[in-house]
Image 1 (tube, rainbow, N blue to C red):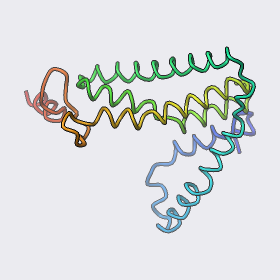
Image 2 (cartoon, helix red, strand yellow; image 1 turned 120 degrees about the vertical axis):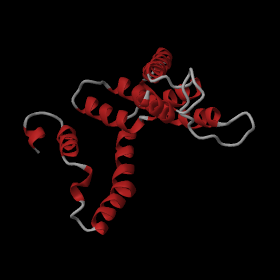
Image 3 (tube, rainbow, N blue to C red; image 1 turned 180 degrees about the vertical axis):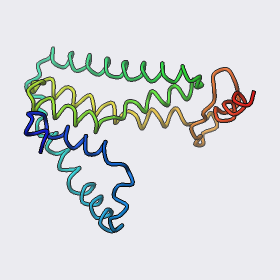
Image 4 (cartoon, one colour; image 1 turned 90 degrees about the horizontal axis):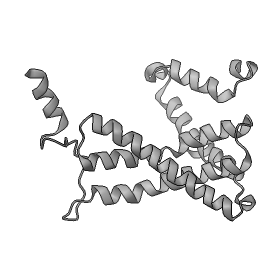
Length: 184
Protein backbone atom coordinates (compact mmCIF):
# COMPACT_ATOMS: atom_id res chain seq x y z
CA UNK A 1 0.00 0.00 0.00
CA UNK A 2 2.85 2.36 0.79
CA UNK A 3 4.47 1.95 -2.64
CA UNK A 4 1.11 2.53 -4.34
CA UNK A 5 0.62 5.67 -2.23
CA UNK A 6 4.10 6.88 -3.27
CA UNK A 7 3.12 6.48 -6.91
CA UNK A 8 5.20 3.35 -7.46
CA UNK A 9 3.74 0.11 -8.69
CA UNK A 10 2.32 -2.14 -5.97
CA UNK A 11 4.57 -5.00 -7.12
CA UNK A 12 7.57 -3.08 -5.79
CA UNK A 13 5.99 -3.19 -2.35
CA UNK A 14 5.38 -6.93 -2.62
CA UNK A 15 8.99 -7.39 -3.73
CA UNK A 16 10.29 -5.35 -0.78
CA UNK A 17 8.23 -7.37 1.71
CA UNK A 18 9.51 -10.59 0.15
CA UNK A 19 13.10 -9.34 0.28
CA UNK A 20 12.84 -8.17 3.90
CA UNK A 21 11.16 -11.29 5.25
CA UNK A 22 13.46 -14.26 5.52
CA UNK A 23 12.48 -17.73 4.35
CA UNK A 24 12.00 -18.82 7.95
CA UNK A 25 9.74 -15.90 8.90
CA UNK A 26 6.61 -18.00 8.58
CA UNK A 27 7.86 -20.89 10.71
CA UNK A 28 5.65 -19.85 13.62
CA UNK A 29 2.56 -20.36 11.42
CA UNK A 30 0.98 -23.79 11.41
CA UNK A 31 2.31 -25.92 8.56
CA UNK A 32 -1.18 -26.37 7.15
CA UNK A 33 -1.64 -22.58 6.82
CA UNK A 34 1.47 -22.18 4.71
CA UNK A 35 0.61 -25.25 2.63
CA UNK A 36 -2.91 -23.95 2.01
CA UNK A 37 -1.59 -20.54 1.01
CA UNK A 38 0.85 -22.18 -1.38
CA UNK A 39 -1.93 -24.33 -2.85
CA UNK A 40 -4.18 -21.31 -3.45
CA UNK A 41 -1.31 -19.39 -5.01
CA UNK A 42 -0.21 -22.18 -7.35
CA UNK A 43 -3.67 -23.44 -8.31
CA UNK A 44 -5.67 -20.22 -8.48
CA UNK A 45 -3.61 -17.03 -8.45
CA UNK A 46 -0.68 -17.97 -10.69
CA UNK A 47 -2.85 -19.26 -13.57
CA UNK A 48 -5.07 -16.17 -13.21
CA UNK A 49 -1.99 -13.95 -13.48
CA UNK A 50 -0.88 -15.76 -16.64
CA UNK A 51 -4.38 -15.43 -18.06
CA UNK A 52 -4.50 -11.69 -17.42
CA UNK A 53 -1.01 -11.22 -18.88
CA UNK A 54 -1.99 -13.21 -21.96
CA UNK A 55 -5.21 -11.28 -22.51
CA UNK A 56 -3.17 -8.14 -23.13
CA UNK A 57 -1.24 -9.76 -25.98
CA UNK A 58 -2.55 -8.60 -29.37
CA UNK A 59 -0.63 -9.88 -32.35
CA UNK A 60 -3.32 -8.74 -34.79
CA UNK A 61 -1.76 -5.26 -34.83
CA UNK A 62 1.58 -6.63 -36.07
CA UNK A 63 2.24 -6.19 -39.78
CA UNK A 64 4.95 -8.14 -41.67
CA UNK A 65 7.66 -5.77 -40.42
CA UNK A 66 6.35 -6.36 -36.88
CA UNK A 67 7.14 -10.05 -37.23
CA UNK A 68 10.65 -9.08 -38.30
CA UNK A 69 10.91 -7.00 -35.13
CA UNK A 70 9.65 -10.00 -33.14
CA UNK A 71 12.37 -12.17 -34.68
CA UNK A 72 14.95 -9.51 -33.80
CA UNK A 73 13.67 -9.36 -30.21
CA UNK A 74 14.00 -13.16 -29.96
CA UNK A 75 17.52 -13.19 -31.37
CA UNK A 76 18.72 -10.35 -29.12
CA UNK A 77 17.10 -11.84 -26.00
CA UNK A 78 18.54 -15.30 -26.57
CA UNK A 79 21.97 -13.94 -27.47
CA UNK A 80 22.11 -11.56 -24.48
CA UNK A 81 21.02 -14.19 -21.96
CA UNK A 82 23.33 -16.80 -23.44
CA UNK A 83 26.34 -14.48 -23.64
CA UNK A 84 25.98 -13.25 -20.06
CA UNK A 85 25.62 -16.77 -18.66
CA UNK A 86 28.47 -17.99 -20.85
CA UNK A 87 30.76 -15.21 -19.61
CA UNK A 88 29.95 -15.85 -15.95
CA UNK A 89 30.37 -19.60 -16.34
CA UNK A 90 33.66 -19.17 -18.19
CA UNK A 91 34.95 -17.00 -15.31
CA UNK A 92 34.21 -19.93 -13.01
CA UNK A 93 35.98 -22.31 -15.39
CA UNK A 94 33.00 -24.52 -16.15
CA UNK A 95 33.29 -27.06 -18.96
CA UNK A 96 31.70 -26.50 -22.35
CA UNK A 97 28.67 -28.68 -21.68
CA UNK A 98 28.01 -26.97 -18.36
CA UNK A 99 28.37 -23.58 -20.04
CA UNK A 100 25.69 -24.56 -22.52
CA UNK A 101 23.39 -25.90 -19.79
CA UNK A 102 23.73 -22.73 -17.71
CA UNK A 103 23.15 -20.50 -20.75
CA UNK A 104 20.04 -22.50 -21.62
CA UNK A 105 18.70 -22.24 -18.08
CA UNK A 106 19.03 -18.45 -18.23
CA UNK A 107 16.37 -18.51 -20.95
CA UNK A 108 13.76 -19.94 -18.58
CA UNK A 109 12.98 -16.71 -16.72
CA UNK A 110 9.51 -16.32 -18.27
CA UNK A 111 7.59 -15.63 -15.05
CA UNK A 112 10.02 -12.94 -13.96
CA UNK A 113 9.88 -11.37 -17.40
CA UNK A 114 6.07 -11.39 -17.38
CA UNK A 115 6.01 -9.57 -14.05
CA UNK A 116 8.41 -6.89 -15.30
CA UNK A 117 6.50 -6.58 -18.59
CA UNK A 118 3.19 -6.21 -16.76
CA UNK A 119 4.61 -3.41 -14.64
CA UNK A 120 6.02 -1.79 -17.79
CA UNK A 121 2.70 -1.82 -19.65
CA UNK A 122 0.71 -0.69 -16.60
CA UNK A 123 3.02 2.26 -16.03
CA UNK A 124 2.98 3.22 -19.71
CA UNK A 125 6.65 2.45 -20.37
CA UNK A 126 5.73 -0.23 -22.93
CA UNK A 127 3.11 0.07 -25.64
CA UNK A 128 0.83 -2.81 -26.63
CA UNK A 129 2.92 -3.98 -29.60
CA UNK A 130 6.20 -4.11 -27.69
CA UNK A 131 4.47 -5.79 -24.74
CA UNK A 132 3.03 -8.45 -27.07
CA UNK A 133 6.41 -9.10 -28.68
CA UNK A 134 8.16 -9.33 -25.31
CA UNK A 135 5.55 -11.76 -23.94
CA UNK A 136 5.99 -13.97 -27.00
CA UNK A 137 9.76 -13.77 -26.46
CA UNK A 138 9.33 -14.87 -22.83
CA UNK A 139 7.14 -17.80 -23.87
CA UNK A 140 9.40 -18.93 -26.72
CA UNK A 141 12.64 -18.74 -24.70
CA UNK A 142 11.05 -20.60 -21.79
CA UNK A 143 9.48 -23.26 -24.03
CA UNK A 144 12.67 -23.90 -25.98
CA UNK A 145 14.73 -24.53 -22.85
CA UNK A 146 13.29 -28.00 -22.18
CA UNK A 147 14.12 -29.55 -25.55
CA UNK A 148 17.53 -27.84 -25.65
CA UNK A 149 18.38 -29.14 -22.15
CA UNK A 150 17.26 -32.64 -23.10
CA UNK A 151 19.68 -32.57 -26.01
CA UNK A 152 22.52 -31.15 -23.92
CA UNK A 153 22.12 -33.59 -21.05
CA UNK A 154 21.78 -36.68 -23.23
CA UNK A 155 25.12 -38.49 -23.28
CA UNK A 156 26.40 -40.15 -26.43
CA UNK A 157 25.09 -43.53 -25.17
CA UNK A 158 21.50 -42.28 -24.92
CA UNK A 159 20.82 -42.29 -21.13
CA UNK A 160 20.38 -39.24 -18.88
CA UNK A 161 23.45 -37.53 -17.47
CA UNK A 162 23.29 -35.06 -14.59
CA UNK A 163 24.91 -31.62 -14.59
CA UNK A 164 28.61 -32.47 -14.41
CA UNK A 165 30.29 -29.45 -12.79
CA UNK A 166 33.50 -30.19 -14.71
CA UNK A 167 36.06 -27.52 -15.43
CA UNK A 168 37.38 -26.73 -18.87
CA UNK A 169 41.00 -27.42 -17.96
CA UNK A 170 40.60 -30.35 -15.56
CA UNK A 171 38.61 -33.57 -15.43
CA UNK A 172 37.85 -33.36 -11.71
CA UNK A 173 34.54 -31.85 -10.51
CA UNK A 174 34.57 -28.27 -9.23
CA UNK A 175 34.05 -29.08 -5.51
CA UNK A 176 37.05 -31.43 -5.51
CA UNK A 177 39.17 -28.91 -7.40
CA UNK A 178 38.27 -26.06 -5.03
CA UNK A 179 39.04 -28.23 -1.99
CA UNK A 180 42.41 -29.15 -3.50
CA UNK A 181 43.23 -25.51 -4.34
CA UNK A 182 42.32 -24.32 -0.80
CA UNK A 183 44.53 -26.91 0.87
CA UNK A 184 47.49 -26.07 -1.29
